[in-house]
Amino acid sequence: MKQTIPTYDLNSITRHGILIERIEKRTMSTIDNLFDKGIHRDSHYIFTFLESGRAKMMVDFKIIEARDAAVFFLLPGQVHQGILMEKVTGWFIAVKADLLPDTARSVFEETLVDVQPVPADGSWVEKLNVCAGMLQMSCTEEMLATKEGFLVVQSLINAFTGLYVLIFLGGNHAGASSESRAVQLTRKFRILVRKEFKTLKSPSAYAGLLNISPGYLTEVIREVTGKSAQHWIHQEVLIEAKRLLSFTQLSVKEIAYELGYSDNAYFSRLFSKVEGCPPTEFRDKYRNRK
Image (cartoon, helix red, strand yellow):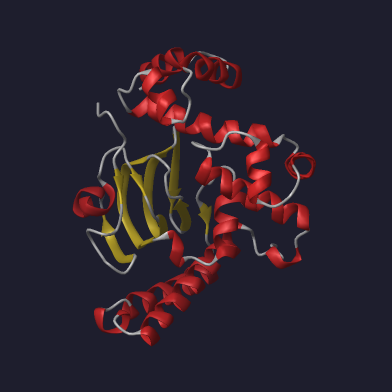
C-alpha cells in the first residue's frame, strides 16, 4: 500500500481544464486511462452520464452503482476507485473547478450530502446528449485558442452542469439568489471549511474570514444545519483522516501531522470521540471488511 493517496489532475492530458469523452458500449478495461487508476483522487470534477449499461465504484468507503439512464458526479478530493463497467454508453466529462459557475458548485458541494446516481428520464437524456455533443464539438484547439471560442465552451459547460443541478434537485431549486442570508452564509462557511480545515480549526477563524462575529456564525450554522460550526470542521477532519487510515500506510502520528495537529494524542482523542473508536481500531475494521 502506498504512503500517500495519488491525486491526478488534467494537466498531463489537456491544458484547457476540460476533457470530454463519448463512451460507446465499453467496459472498464478499454478506457483504463480514464477509469482504472486504482484508489486515487482527482483535483477536478468528474461528471458521468449513462444512457445505458452499468457502472459501479467505491467513493469514500461507500459503493455506488448506476444502471441504465442515470447521472452522477465526483467532487475534487473524493477518494474513489472504479470497480465495474459493463456495456456503458454515455458521456464522461472532467472539468477543473474554476471553470464551473459558483451557483453550480454550491449545489454540488453543499446541498448534496450523500451523492448517489440519479435516474434520468427520456427528456433529460435528450437534453444532456445534445449539450454534451455540442461541448465535444466545441472543445477543439482552434476554438479554445481564442477568447471568443473559449467563451462558447464556457457557456456549454455552464449549460451542461446546469442540467445536472436541475436533475439532482428535481427541478425544485429556486436558486441561490432566493435563499436567505443564513443559508448563503452556511454555504460559504462549508466551502471555506472544505478548503481550509487542515490549518483553521476554530469557528472564530472562519467567522473572521466571513467578516461576521463568532457568535453570529455559531447561531446561523446551528439554525440552518442543526449542527454546530465545530461539528462541520471536525467532519472534514474526520473524513480525511479515514481516507488516510484506509488507503495509506501512514502512521496515526503522521496522519495527525498531515491534518494540522502537532499533538498526536489530542488528534486520537478527537477521532475516538467523533467516530466512536480509536484511529487504529478504525483502520483494522476497514481492512478486515475488504
